[in-house]
Image 1 (spheres, rainbow, N blue to C red):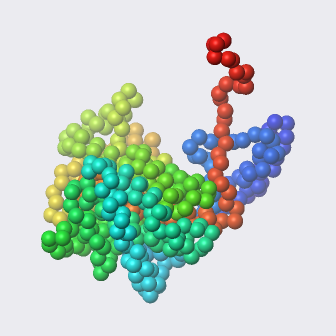
Image 2: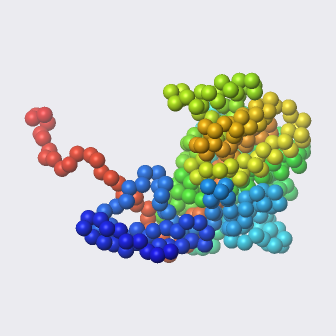
Image 3: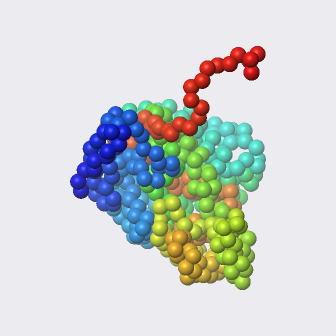
Length: 426
């Protein structure tokens, strides 16, 4: 690719073209302001590469999602969440011995400082689990001073392991607190996901038996949500980290951003929509409403900011729903409603023209509900899974020699300079 020349404000500036290993090339505009006195204007950063990254690649037009080059479908089908964590953190899939060692390291960090149990009791009983998670993760820096020096690679590594390991414990305790049940300590003889299921749904009065199909389904959901390039919450983590903030504060910032209904809360919204529709015979009415510009109703779980094709994660989710339903002997009419809604919407030219295809949120809420999670926990589970992506992105940013503190510019449209008028003269 050849470099571009921009002629503006009576000046010409050369904009070098940068090539990635895959995907579109980008124009390097870093020297544009110095050369022309002008900025670019890009609300929502829809056409701006904010960083250089080797973690995750998305081709929204083709429906492609790669983690370190591996297709998400292959990882979801053949890998485990612990393998994907290792892959994102280290760049390569682990050998059997490397995976075993990594899993043991994570299992050694699953417990929380005992005083954090008192911290939980400071929240109202009806506090949203995301509010609790945001507060507890932010408070971790007050308990783990030995892993907050971002300039020490070893401390960054320890902090990353701690966050990945402790997030299931934090999430399970948030759930237990909301339903008035006692906290359960981790059982490190179980897998990462099995341990989380036991801490969430087990009780001290009787043993908890992990259902393999449910464990595998939830592990798969974690894989599908592990990382997703420079989305809003990941960009928030990077922006917070660019100031030199400690890793626990950065992840808490990501959790706060993820809480937004347009981001992490989308699967809850999709499930609520399916409940509102109810039965398949009501689908045509809601399809008509979705196509009516004067009606605020929208099909939740369809369309994506990046994907303009079928979300590759949605294909895996549809298969997983069937596996969970069969294992738990669940007969949920919402699944049949979802299948028929997808079929009708995909055959409608209106949705095809607008490239509104099902995304990962369309089916994940049905699965989580069947397992037993209340809708208030959906975004918590998203945060649990996305933690590995956040810490991997944070580590990559800290290690980048070109990293600078994030400082977007603006198009100012307020009043021009004016003189102060004394209060008595106004």
